[in-house]
Length: 409
Image (tube, rainbow, N blue to C red; front, side, top):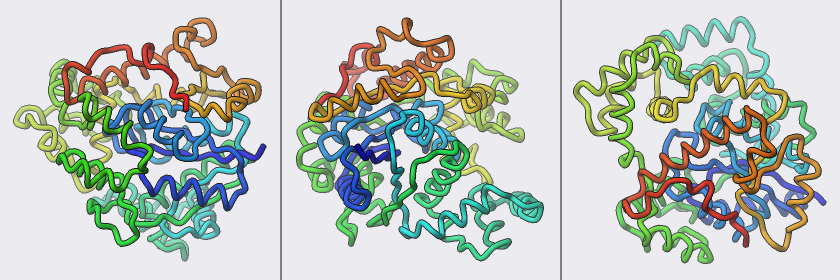
C-alpha cells in the first residue's frame, strides 16, 4: 500500500496543513499518510502551544493515518538535525514510499540542485562561509550568500524557512541512502506572517498562536479545521493551552543559577564563548525576552538562543546529540496515535521497522536497551517541563507520558 510521509510540528494543525495533505495525496496517489511530529517542543526551541496528543488527534482527524513522535533531541535542534531525525524515523519505519514537504517555490529540481551543492562544499565555499561569518552574518545567512556566490542558485531558495528545511530533507535522504522519493507542495500564504488576514486564505501557525495568546480565540478558530474546534477548545478551557516560553522563565533562572560556564559550554549548540553571555544575562535580565535579547548577536539568531536555553533546561549536551545521530539505528519509534480504519498500519509498522516500536511506555523496560531508556527519559522530562508552562496550575501534573492514552480516532 503506497504510503506518504510528512515531517511536521502541527503547532497547531490548521487549514493550510489540511490543504497540503490533500494535495500531497492527490499528487502521490498515496493511500496512507504517516506524520512524524515534534512532541512537547518545536524546532525554534519553543514549547508547542498544545500538548502532543491534542495535536496528534487534530492531524488524525484531517487526513493523517498515523502520528509518530520526533524525539526532542532532534525536534528542538538545528534544521539539519531536525531534518535528519525526521527523515530517519520515516526511513526506519520501513513503510514510507514518498517524503512530502512544503516549500515556497514548489520547484523540486532547483532544490535538489542546491542540496547537492550543500552536500559537496568546495574549498571556495568554505572560505566564503568563514568570511561572511566573520562579518557577523548568522550561519543561515552566511551559507546562503556563500552558495549564491559560488553557483547560480538563488539565495531565495537558500534563505526561506520552508526551503531551508526542504534542502535538509533532501540531504538527509541522500545521507541515509533512502529509497523514499521526495516531493514538494508549494506553500500557500506567508510562513512568517503574524496576520490572520492572509490573501491566500491560509493564516500561518504563528499568526494562529499569536491570536490565541491574545485571547482572540474565535478569530483564530476561523483558520482551524472545524472538526478540531472542540478538541482545541477543551485544551484551552482546561488551562492546558496555549503554552509559551513565559511559563518557563523561573525554571530557566533556577537552572542557570546552578550552572558554571564550563557546564554551559558542554550544552548543545553553545559555541565560541557564548556561555559567558548566557551566564551574565541573568545578572540584569529577568523576563525571558530580555534574557534572549541580551544573549543574541547578529551571528546568533533568536531562534538559536531559544534552542540553547531549552537545551540548558533539558541538559542536552552536544556529545549526546552527536552520539544518537551516529548510532546505526534509532533506539525506538514511538507511536502517538493512529486511525482505527487504518489499524493494520500499526501491525505493518511493527513488522517492518528497523528498531523497536513503542506504544505503551510501561512496557519500555522490556523492549528498550539502555540508549532507548535514556532517550525516553529525556522525552518524559521534556513533557513534564512542558506541563509546567500550562496556564492553569491545576493542569500541571507530571508523568503524562505514562498516563495519556494513544490518540485513536
